[in-house]
Length: 318
Image 1 (tube, rainbow, N blue to C red):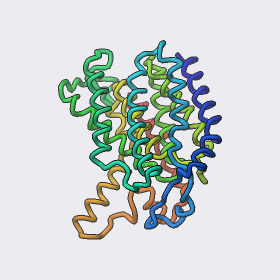
Image 2: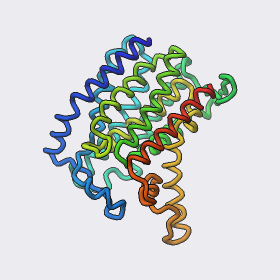
Image 3: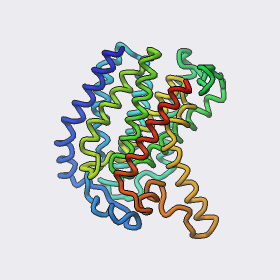
Image 4: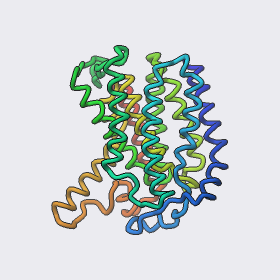
């Protein structure tokens, strides 16, 4: 499994790195460019026109690499399904915003419906396949589990959609979402290889795909992943966690995602409660730090280091 996982990483990396440049040029030719908020950080205005929907770059690497091993490791299929399914919801949203020039994209209800359909199918799969089941590993208990039974039908979609939106909110700075998720994917890969879980090659494929993408997404970014990429990554994180019975561990390894979501909830709630006042300078919270004087590269480095440390904590919690 280790050898297959390493090969999967290299395949995904090679595909992402090789297709990125011509695809970026094609997206630029089609004028599939990002539109930045005028009320946001002024430094972001120069990013207007940067090609978006670049998530297809690493998705292509992940899918091709996974297909090479899906016959040998069939359990990676449901995780790949969620990754692609959520990515498709994001692609439709991006297409409406970028190609059809409708700035709002999918309505919140439409996006939620798409995510819920994918999450419901995955939840049914987990509950009807005993090798996954409804048991969850509890952190810091030496591997003890709890079986939540029928509550899994509500718990699983809730965690999946929450995680997906957290990852989506973290996609606001050059390289931020990709850098943080590389760390999370590395954690899953190490755990999967150690426990001989069949999802390991997909985890390393995500690592490879994102590393190839980061060659063009680090500051100053030549391409953005868009909702196509961020929703796909959120789907991967949630589905991989459930297949390995580790959804509770998302609270540890995914603290950055959680903080991003909470910052938006706090900002919106405070704004409504105080009739116009803001708790943060801007939400999600990475923009607050930007407006407080931090450089993009500093924020990305800090958030990535935090995630790496928390992944080590989560590994000890196993």
